[in-house]
Image (cartoon, rainbow, N blue to C red; front, side):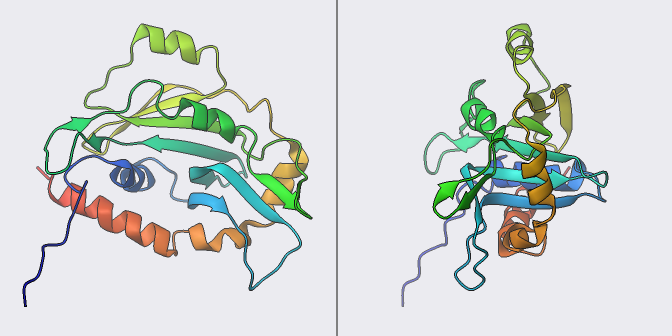
Length: 212
């Protein structure tokens, strides 16, 4: 019986999963609680009477030991086309609209209506994969206008923060308090989840092929 090789698209490039894996391993504090690719916490098996909803999906949520909450939007390299070794690195504006939306997330949905009036995250960052450590002057000028921070992800797994995030102007204390009290409802996005195990497999596949 003829079998076809399994596609491993993206394993040879520093894609979003590889960035995510390295970011968790090399950048985030070890004593932080972390959640990945969070869209919602709806469950028909455990009805709560309310749900969190994020649009867009939040790539990483970090809760530090002091209860500071930081959200990260990640952008990795992408293949130029199938079976090609060429890659596209994120453009400057890639993910900028998404990370701006983070300022007002998550939404609390109760009785099919949005309840929250502000976000839970104290700070938000945009993380871009880049082939080298380079941040242009015009990029700095634009980020000076925004509350968003910027971190460069380099192909060797190193991360460089080039712009510090300002406090989230849309953060709501009640929303943050609600979120911190219900972190257990994000279990499917934790470091014990299938989502994280998949990220690890893809990240390990990338770095195993790029070890010196």
